[in-house]
Length: 227
Ligand code: AMP
Image (cartoon, rainbow, N blue to C red; front, side, top):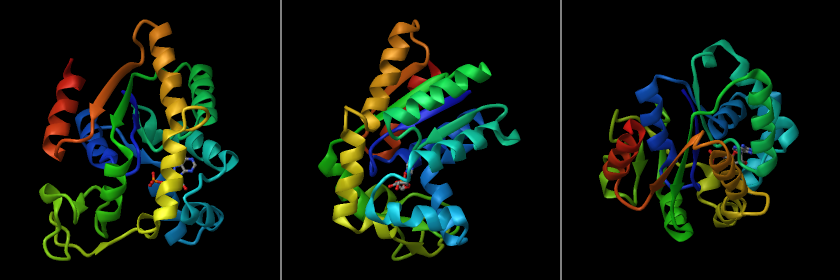
């Protein structure tokens, strides 16, 4: 199963993505995680990406696109994948579409989490990352996933905030890119909507209301995936 997952920063996309990953037993490929991992290991890629990420800008396409296409060609992805955080603009969507067509690989499902910009912003500022596992959701502003004191609510691990999550200018820039329907992420979402309409409903589109609590959103997601 090959799946794309769209949603503005702060919509809970990472949390719901983990559910899709488990359901289909596919690797969860998150561009942001790949970049942060490279930054913490001080690799060339990390050094190159850091400035863009700190400013809330996209890492340039000539770095990001080959990085992801390379990853999809790897052994780990031969039985399917979940891409989260890519494509982030129309160019990336078109390049991915071309690459998949060339390889004869079908895109099966496109999930879009829909959430108001201001709600998403509040959620971002409350988000905390578990040092042991990125898929342990913790947010100081959401009761259902509030940390235990200052520790991870799942494993008791230490928590940290992402520096780009505490900078309002950077958050606004990321959201400007997401909600941009001309060339940004919403342009990519619309590209897949058009593709699905012109191709008899393939890929299947799933729209998820991101406003309810984590459990309600995942129930909705799982029921739509089962259809
Ligand atoms: P995220 O963890 O998805 O919020 O991503 C963190 C940052 O990584 C973004 O603000 C961008 O700077 C960079 N990034 C993630 N995905 C992409 C992408 N597909 N294209 C370019 N930059 C990206």
